[in-house]
Length: 137
Image 1 (cartoon, one colour):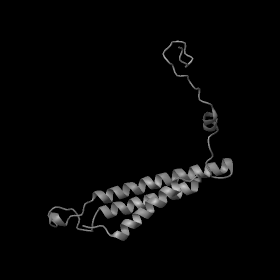
Image 2 (spheres, rainbow, N blue to C red; image 1 turned 60 degrees about the vertical axis):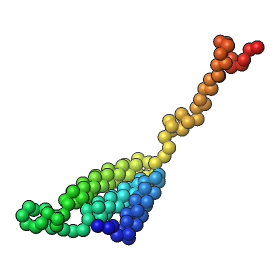
Image 3 (cartoon, rainbow, N blue to C red; image 1 turned 90 degrees about the horizontal axis):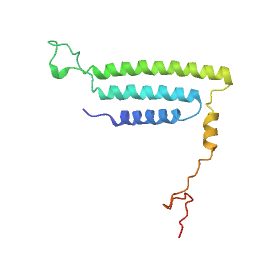
Image 4 (cartoon, rainbow, N blue to C red; image 1 turned 180 degrees about the vertical axis):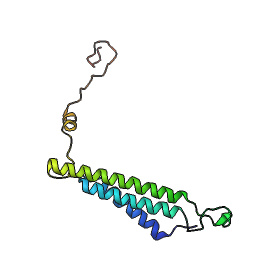
């Protein structure tokens, strides 16, 4: 089994686009990034499943012709998770738009305050016991 180069490139483009959109400050771009990542994951799982085969029912066909059902189950799980994240981000974006008037995520004021604080600088102890950091002759 070989993976088609075009499909592998498509998965790579979907993942790259999704991660790029996730890094933006707009919640709608984050939402679109999650959806694109979900589609990329579904395509990757279907590619990993291999070519289509027969239903895995014992006695109906030879075991070599069975289709692995695990990638299909994982794709369904990925669809459900993507749908849940999409609805959550839609609600978050709507709430942000109602409260603030836009969906851009701002820096936290407390984080900016902490980053501006000057870190205390401690003197190096030179071993003479006076704590001034200077060696005494």
